[in-house]
Image (cartoon, rainbow, N blue to C red; front, side, top):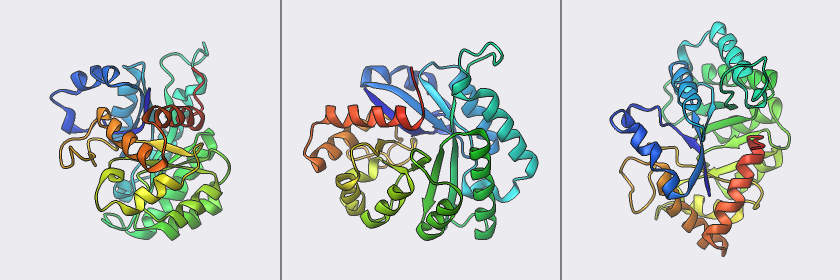
Length: 270
């Protein structure tokens, strides 16, 4: 079975057929997904999506492009929701409802788009790492063209085995080693299939088998042969095939090891 560790099915690109897409996933071998919030608005839509589907879990956080108007009240609300709906509360009669939150994310730095001033990005990155520590959840890290600052902040504020994921990893094998040494998992998706995805291919072959994860980042970054189209979790078979070839193993082995890695990282026991 496939575990898609990073999706955005609450995105408006699925507005017309969201439920049909989600209903089709099991036939493609996709057993679980984590929907990732990127703004305070999507914190609500992500949580609602997870609560309405047994196989969907939630990560709550704010993407660096969206941090410009954050407030401490937002951090209080993020903390409150994460504590109330954390997965570890499942079955607790004192915590009614579906308890599906498994991480804080996606959070981090984006120096490619620079939608928010870099110092503001850093400030709210650290504050959301504080939230993750307060609620005892792993983090989902977004880092684009910001390797050193991301690494330095994580080294100071969030290290240790299973502390989080560097999603859509876009740096070198050497940089992957540095994040791995901090205790992070590495998530790879469609770029692994691109002809110009040399760094991703090297990382896919290098990452230890107990630290590799599959992701789509859908609706973005669809793999070859569907590059440029709306992405979805069913496309992960192409990514798994590419990684299997790079590592000299079978697709089934890739799916099995990344499934177990995702369960361990997200602390799922069901």
